[in-house]
Amino acid sequence: MSDPRKPSPFDSLDKRLKAVRDRRSKREGKSSTARGSGGSSGLGVGMRIATEIVASIGVGVAIGLFLDAQLGTKPWLMLLFILLGTAAAFYNVVRVAKGLERRSKEDRDNSRPK
Image 1 (cartoon, one colour):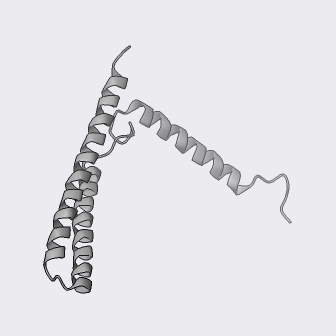
Image 2 (cartoon, one colour; image 1 turned 60 degrees about the horizontal axis):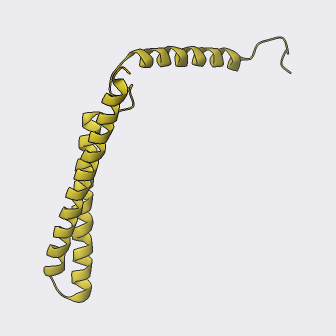
Image 3 (cartoon, helix red, strand yellow; image 1 turned 180 degrees about the vertical axis):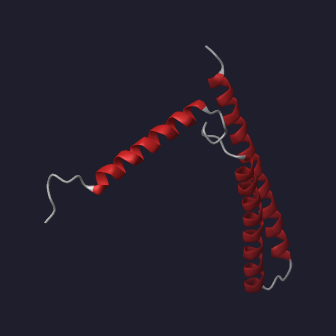
C-alpha cells in the first residue's frame, strides 16, 4: 500500500496547473488582443462566412437535383434552389456582419471611461 505521509504526485500537478492558470489569467487580463477580449479573429470570421456560403449553395444544389430526379423537371428546380441557396448564403453573411458590428460597438462602449 502507499505511505499516507508521502504526497501524491497529483498534488504537485494540481499546484503547477493552478500556477499556469493564474499566470494566463493575469496575462489575458492585461492584454487587449481580440482573443483575450472574447472577440473573434478575422480569419475565423472569414472561414465561417466562406463555410456558410458553400454549405448554403451546396444544400440548394442537392435539394434541386433530388427534386429534379424525382419530378422529372431536369434543370429547373436545381436552378431555382441554387438561387434560393445563394439568397440564404447572403442572408447569413449579412446576419454575421451585423452581429460582428453589434459586438464591436458593445466593446467600444464598454471600453470608454465612465
